[in-house]
Image (cartoon, rainbow, N blue to C red; front, side, top):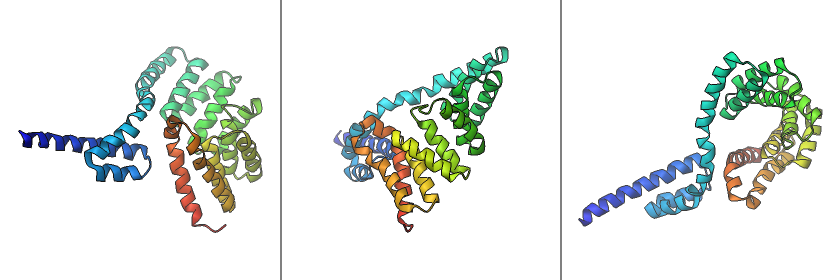
Length: 249
């Protein structure tokens, strides 16, 4: 009987460690957790699950939204055959954006804008899709239209994306001016990161390091749920800083 108990206990320990390692790979928390999981055995894995995995349950709502979103996409794809209205194309475009299908999102906003040109959101969202597709020449006029209509559009993300589009289309003066406007108001990590990349491209390495570091400096004061959402930007900032340290000022 004792041997049977230890057999099942060892298997449960392996399962707990497996769950912890998979979560670690997907979420990339602090590196020391990997040592705790590997060296601490089932107890280390249990501690990790309690501290890192269970709090992540609050983020599962986003994951679960994939299924109703894709169901709604299928519904709209059918509805548009009978009712190709601008509103239906705008909703479908937004769903495609959320799903990461930027080419289809752009096509939907093309159709929505061809039907009506008074929706700033359609131009802005099309600009977002174009930027994601690296078609920055097309993104510039769409993002300019949104920023011109409302400089603070989408919590100032529009300004940050427009600055990035200027940088990618070799308009450094406009990019610099727009980045300065955006970063003076917004603390969006995406904007900070793109500004750091822009400064790196100009050879202003010390300034690039400063803006990449600003992303990491936000971490201590963030609530836990926000730190979890910002992890991709923390990883990008760490990687950029590593590259920048190898470059002379």
